[in-house]
View 1 (cartoon, helix red, strand yellow):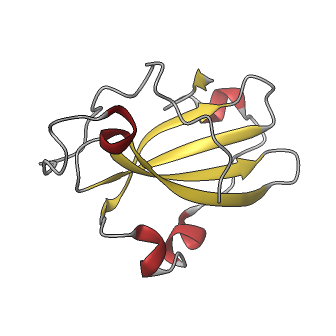
View 2: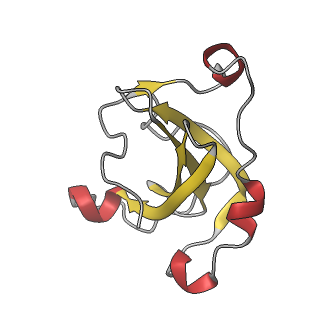
Length: 118
């Protein structure tokens, strides 16, 4: 995965897909007990084969993200999932609230999502 956060216009000069209508249509049940933090995009990762972007939206829970997977060739949203790094890595700070935007240790780190969307 390549961190392309804030460089999307450089790596995709033809433009990027607007994922916000998709995000707005996600059923509440898919969010489990998590809430988005003002639709704030924390990070954007491009797969090593250049076929997909993974757009991470911050939630109000530390280390939990809504991941939107974009198929770059088709120009469509392929799906989404909740990435709960607290659960996946046994973080003892699970459930800690987030005060505001900012990288919480995932941008540029090796914890980028690697699973396909649901």
